[in-house]
Length: 446
Image (cartoon, rainbow, N blue to C red; front, side, top):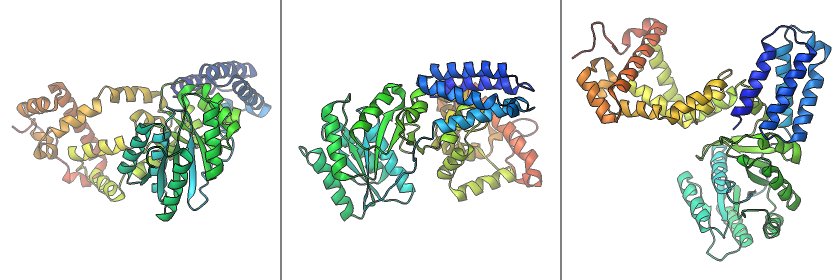
């Protein structure tokens, strides 16, 4: 979502860090570029103006301009101010009560139902025992979707008989959750296509009756400044505790996500980064600011890796790498583990200095290159995966035909994997004795 803004900011700030001392005129020119980049990204005009004014005021101080590392200090100031811009309110998820009630509100199409399932999965990983409540009696499809998602996650879903009102459904779900010893109830409430008095009255009644510990407004981050207007309308009707932004991985300009907290005063507590139920993150302003400025987000990357990788399995892979016995089966398994961590472009954005390659890497994935690699390896026999050195011309033609790829694709993969194994042998030291005999001297075995 922040690709265009991130690129503009990185390029602008790189012009400052690429020189020694920085003059006030250099800062002024950079701030004009930053302001333009924010406005083009659909950041609220007042927010962009105040942001640039704060950065300029700090950046033109004698201590900064007189420093030999003035460019780096300006970047640090931009990062700190961007973090402050995103840091409005209390971002802690408060789950008090027995059970704690979390009400998800929002317009139709904002992603409430999917977000309810994502939140349930997140809470399960936190050791909680949530229950989902289908409190949208107007859309049977939404109820069925929630039931399906709950079944996938092994999280119970309370649904009321047809004709039951919103308030009765919610109260019934809370009662059932209490009886079953569930400690969190997530209400997937009804929405409308637009904000209207009937919707506002209904949610106000629901919130007053159920007294949620958290009343979160689910907003589609791709709707631009209209998201700010929606947040203002809901905040006027009910006491919201925070925001859950969806479709952060979309291709919109992203300015609303940057300015909504500053305009409304409501904290962003969670953000959806994809369509799958594991694509939900706690909102960390400093981490998002780091991603936007190309500084990476190593902490989130580590957290995703810890969730995706089994500790014993990781130890086995590390040992194979050390002994240079890492084979194509292992390579395929690692590809599948990486896919669990999220889109490759997102992962690269979390590595410092790699943000510029994220779009290119994701384009490579979108072209199906990882799928081709998986198909090629899956078309090999167990013997061929264990000893790629036996892959003669006829075997490679068979693999290409079986995987729906070309002989060139197969040859490229074999060559790249061979080069990788040479590197592993080089760094594996004496442990390399057990290495797979890839690419033997004198050519492949026939």
